[in-house]
Image 1 (cartoon, rainbow, N blue to C red):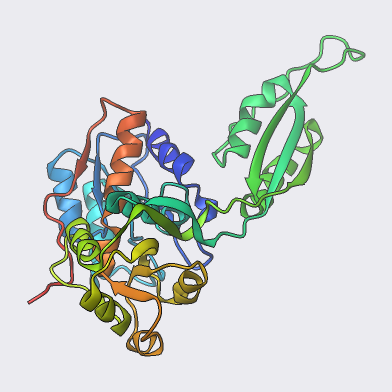
Image 2: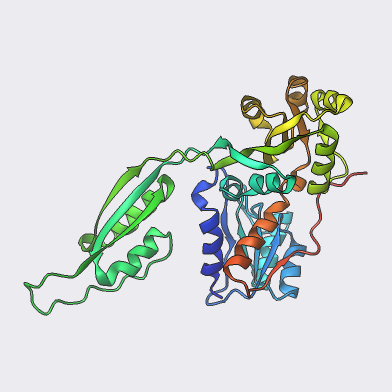
Length: 347
């Protein structure tokens, strides 16, 4: 299996242009030259042990939710967990690909999956992504069409030399290629197309986009209202957590326990910044992770807030990767890590 096919399948589902500007979605450690992908191991966080597990199971690609290389590496001394994992990957010939906020912001991504597992139907994104898109139309010689398609898809392009004309007065056969790209992709595409010189011409036209399905977090609704006790039990079961942190408002709801939870907001991972958006969306409860003390203190009444834990709210990322890859490649080896553990323990 070509590594590009595996990565393209993930990026078709969660395009890299959806990632936040501070993120590092993409290939973290590459494949050895000429290597095929022999199998995929799925995880949330990449560690040296995960790399060893992948190698033992015959997988030369690890796909993770959290980037292995996040803030950048200034050295490879093996002093940090990330450095040791990178060194182990290089030594073992194991590539690492991560899809972080791209997977968070895509339709069907992390918060969508969490809502589905809780039995709620998504209404819209909680914080819709502001994405500018452009329709790029390219006119080129027919022998350039494959290279142009690769450029528009964000891939490496092998450009053949133009075939010589038998007659100087003969017109070169032309064709057109078209694709919609994000503003982040546009500069790269146009630079690559410009490098082809006078052989191609292109136009880039802005496309109206108001897709409220894309973005961080979701607003979702249950078919019927749930009592706080039933909702809490469902959240703990789905997230696999023995305890949650909550604000005073949820504690007050529990004392009544009438069916009061119909509309919810969810954001996998650190979602404290979207408490206001969840409140504005009319959510009865906001489920997220890494909520600060002062966020609880400043939101004592009104909307209930549940902090279910970071790993707990994002472990569904592995199920998303598994579904995407096994649907695209039914007979390909895709495994969940057997050794991965939540780095946060409860006593």
